[in-house]
Image (cartoon, rainbow, N blue to C red; front, top):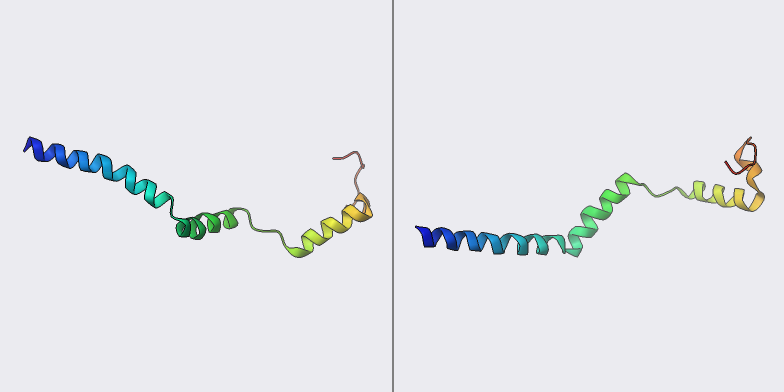
Length: 72
């Protein structure tokens, strides 16, 4: 019983880290899960928002509305 238990424990100790390393380094899983989750947390900006910001930068900060123009 003791030898079988030790073989089982050794197999488990070696298999678990190798399996976790293999799962974590799957490129397809990374693209499907991690990038999708990133897009859920921080959605990409809309084109009209980007163009409005660029227009305001070119025209000046006056198009953003009333402010005291001290940078804040």
